[in-house]
Image (cartoon, rainbow, N blue to C red):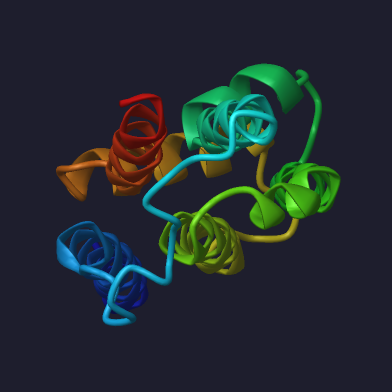
Length: 172
């Protein structure tokens, strides 16, 4: 492993650590607004919309995991640059499609989703910049999956835990 690869690995692990710590802190954080974050009584007319919003952002979180992205986007013959562009465009496009869901979910859940999106894009870009422009997409995919495997606990899993906990709180 050369020094450039070590630098890339350190940067990537650092980025994943930031996501992990941010999401972990979001899970532990209680609203400091004395309950103003979410009403104590749920409006029965809005509850279905809130639950649907949590479902949609949970689906988004699952769809932007590297494993899911690679499975949907990869085609033989793509270059690493093509794959990088496709993954980043997909993440951004799906985010824009779901951006209105923030109206119905807590700011903590939405911040976790935004952080996950930004960090996933960051890792993809950091890995891609280390590869030669004509590298095959399979090499980018392999290195991205390695980075997320080495990170330990998945940032997407932590974000999903926040979303699931909040949705369950609404139902009780």
